[in-house]
Length: 141
Image 1: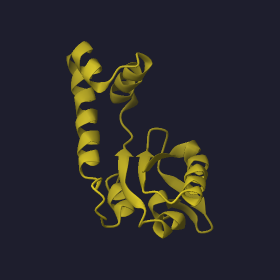
Image 2: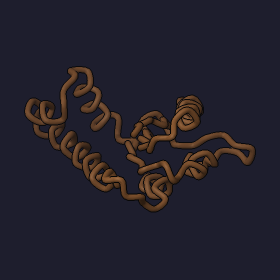
Image 3: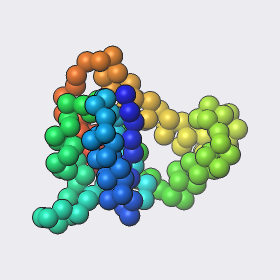
Image 4: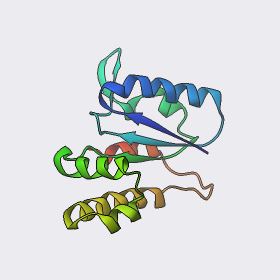
């Protein structure tokens, strides 16, 4: 299994190209991490700007996509600051929860719990799931 990130905003086109290259070069199952941190998950198409979930290469490869994990855009002054501090200190979720004050700890727990719930929902036992692209992308709506 391979995990790859598609970022929103200014990094969308480049990360989509990287994901397309990865999918073309491998035949293994894929988990897509959809990151809204820098902006919406949209790409330019012949018809204008469209949600990444509508990208044809994703629909063509849907049998290989085990699912998506959405990293939603969050308030930069609170969730963003806490996440950046956790990453700057190179802390795990557990370490950050043990070390941070009450409100940052609560926000980090929320992020962790939401990510874990998405990971728990993936068919990692080899079972094929429904169209996970739409499921993951609709969580951002």
